[in-house]
Length: 214
Image 1 (cartoon, rainbow, N blue to C red):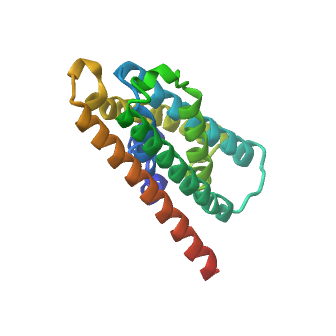
Image 2 (image 1 turned 90 degrees about the horizontal axis):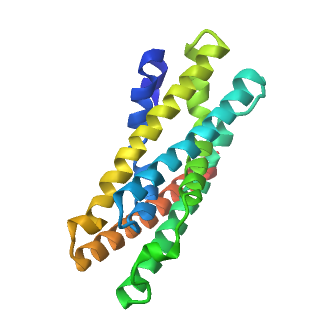
């Protein structure tokens, strides 16, 4: 995130767009959108993730910038454990559903009426874990509270756009229009799940080592 500190306000959306493509973000959203059979619905999941992420960052930003609330940056670093646990749970849940689909219990995942609030909640958690560093860097480089809040808002718009694109691309192999083979869809779902679980466990381990060092 060091590049954020030297970037002017005009590039906030570009930074937010790139931020959406960080590994933990992509893995979490892939566990959600690979259940879609319609890319439009998957794209909406990406938008809702971005809105959740932006909501948390703006809330934390208003507390620190406008409300002058004092929080140690280490608090947000520790919340990375929550992200790790969430990734493990998401991956496990998706792996279970993939297995049920394989067994024929779930003939069409969309019959389960998956709602966008899940993607929004995942975005909220991601924003909470990473918001501290973003806000502190913005505060250190921009001269006024108005500029700082504007940066965070534009940053959020960029992240919504980035995750909209990522979610749309992830959903393509699962789209009915592309008529992808079932074994390919199942294999990609399992791969996404395993990567999500593995990365989540790595985050938990990494944070545990960091906490032990202190």
